[in-house]
Image (cartoon, rainbow, N blue to C red; front, side):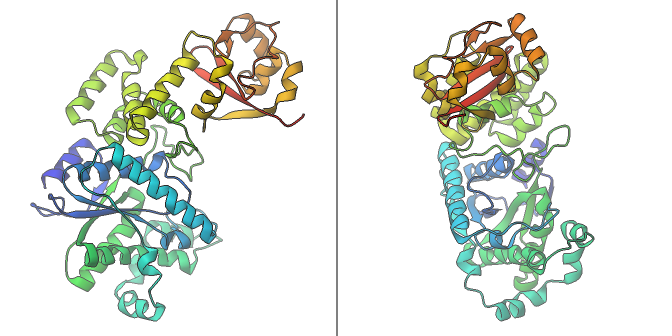
Length: 424
């Protein structure tokens, strides 16, 4: 159909099941995307799916976000080398609430008229009787197909192997599609490209039990041009909750995107029209040093995730840290909040009284050694709280509001020291 063709042209579809025209992406159709509650916030790796949901919802389709209270307790083996660590009921409930907040906030910022329905699959899985489930559902799922899927085959060959619970995960996800087809008329499931096997299992189950065709669309997994995966399991998570990753930290993360990645990210992670993306990329290619694509990307993402006020805070913090002005004590608490999620070191406040500029540079990570710190300071390449630092300068009063110090190396790289009241 026309919408699928538009998504394909934009490059935001990794794969899809065959779709008729007119098809399941017509106005008024219902689709869903699942999120397992493995953390108390979604992360940047989830943005492709969220932006795709917002895009379709703004075009008149009905979105369902399915938060896997049941499947999250089992654990998806996809992309895992070992079984996920179990979570307590309290942890799962807390994670469910955090994810619900993330999605609701983003849809509000995107000004989507169509109501987002957020469901927890524990609502139906929690009522299932095992014998009835195996009789009514399990008998229609072929084991041969289950064990051929990459995530199962890969893990089955390892020493640890694959648990029965993990093998059953795709059966539970398939049942979700069946349940949403029956109760919500849902005919399309979105997911990352690593979910293709789980999604097609659901399509097969609906076809076998209801004799109807439903459809799946997968989105490219967010990776860098060097192949690094952007996600929580990759150990480099950038969260969508401001108390975990501030609007400034989110802005900086995407502002530092490599030139090779920026055009694809603009298409995948923003709602900018195709012609706007093309214009930004053209401007960017003409003056890459100005980082036009990265600035646009970072601004659009922060505005979507944290709203206009969040973007204002990110821009203000950037100006404070990388501008010409000196930072003041009064800005300390505000900056501490704005720099939430920015990597740094924590040191005892008492140690600052006897610390030299060289020692502070090394402790913060701005210099790898005392010799490098001296060279940096002699050359005027290190700034402490916005002021150029000197080799013999006094840094005893460098804790802004007694809570943090910001060191800047050159024009682009900041290092944060957070001070604790604990004695050294």
